Image 1 (tube, rainbow, N blue to C red):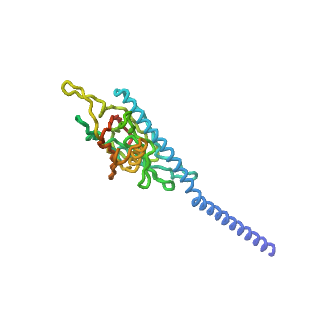
Image 2: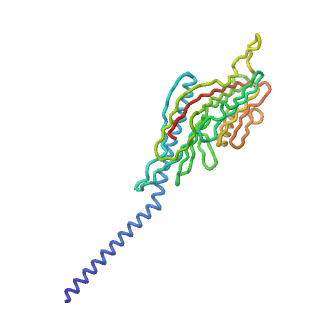
Image 3: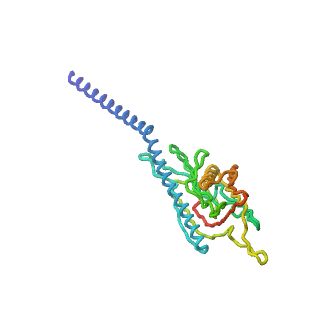
Length: 309
């Protein structure tokens, strides 16, 4: 009887030890999972979002480069028909060990404010772009980040802009060039506009979407070197002022861009140029100035844009 009691006690003790070991193991697993969830997953998620944003930035810079290539090709040969495809990675890699947490975002085509208005005053007929450039098209990417900063990448009016928290910065410049001329008081301003012609659309996705670009046409909008015939005389217009208005949601980026252009050419605000900002609008002006020569050229490259949106 004593032997049986001792054996039963040993079995009971062994069962308790196994239960305690299982409880300890479960506690270790829960503690490890909690530590991973609280300390490692946010870091992994932030790293994944950062890597994805870097990939999207490369895609957007490639998009601008492709548009510039097509515009340059049209300038050399307006009849050229070139097609370029530009994939954009709307989704990034999954977070390690965690399923269903793939990064993603929203791609918008021709959905943002983007356009130009050019008014040239001279001693001949002048020039007003009216509705020709009223909408030039845009492509933007809006992420759905949780841990990494939410930066919006936007291509508009030939520029690539980064926007965050109602602030914006131009990272890649448009085809707007301002420089001092060869004369004592001479300034050259050229605008190479690009119009993206295509359907408006917005898509939220975590896959790769393709944007197709096709060169269509190239138009010389205004050239101050053009000659006019008046009777038996051949005349060249003398430009007295130029107003260039940019329609945009990123007014800070455009204002800074024009300020830097003027500073590089030692132009004084209020004397050599004016700059005004309104909601969704920035206007750069070369006002009339005694003995100043303004050489102005404006072109427009029209590119067809297609996507799966």
